[in-house]
Image (tube, rainbow, N blue to C red):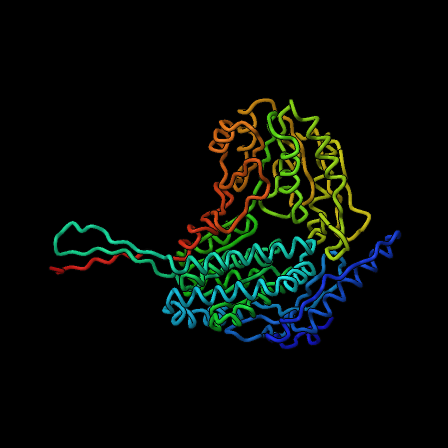
Length: 530
């Protein structure tokens, strides 16, 4: 689909249109299934395009802008391999203009009262929620997750906007008792300035709102660089922000050449903060690059999450929690259970129950009729990584209980997989899988579980399943992770701080603590006050 055909006006009126989730009819032959999925996705894309909901240009200073050299990149539907649209492939020049636009907007936006900023964010939240079906469909098209899960992400992403709309009014300073009678000592908090936000493809909306909402709430302006795999949701959200009354230039979106965009953000002295969610390797490069201009940095990086099942765990709760943690978004989340450590007394029962549950998971296109549990991987590189990790494990003695190969749907679909007899020398025991593969490892004692869980450079999320209250406290405190779920596999929420330790990152997002990442603290001493 040519970009010219889809670059139609994105108006309030067109956004009031609702799209019912399209359906596919079950077919016995793979070719029929593939054709039906393709037709279904194409019809959704056509309707979103005709309503102006699919944008193909960058968003700089409140204006839709082509790449200056006219270059474009394809946005691919990972479930079908079809091109959804071509979007502008931007680089350093466009990014520098976006930074200048953000700096200009910062001068006025930072002076707007907290109450007014709060109202704008609340309106943005309302618009996101009123268009959750369209945003969900757009997300399923470009990212592949099942439609129900995508719509759920819209609610999750919007929750950060709502939360920080409220927190905007709660950025408090302090009065310090003076050491001399004629002095008055104050602490005020002020917005850091222009923020460069670099976001991943696995949560195309939530990873943006979790950064942009607190930044806007305290008076910052933002240049967003979404993943080139999933820019469409970001562009739609940016348009809604302007409709909500957030001034043009406060939110800018550039996509395309990742290294050029990143280098421009790092080099600019006007960009006072970098916030990034993505791989540890890229995070380290950004951290090093930010040193030249001494920017504030927030990093949410890779994980290697252990999921520890103790003998005294409630089996049903443990299976449900491990499933939710491992297979959400086809295993493509930084907090996915990457290693399932099971105590020897419950190992056989858990492995059997867990495998049966995984075998019953439905794999399919995100628009398939009925509940779909697992969608496609994002691209061919992701498929190759998962296949290579599984083959490495099998070659070193792992046994396949469920799955272990590409799904019959073809393309980038991989069967939900359970492996046992996992050894530490296997790659998937040491590195983030980022796919629907659950490796089970047996342990004997609590001390062994803690030691093995902590034996990694990562420290983002961990999970414990036990009915022993003393153990839950003891193990939670011993685990070297920023997030710990006890008898629960889905722990992310806008009201709690999200972030890791060790090489999983710096800083926290969400919660009352998240807004501090976008503020500078200033001490004011006033003399001769008697």
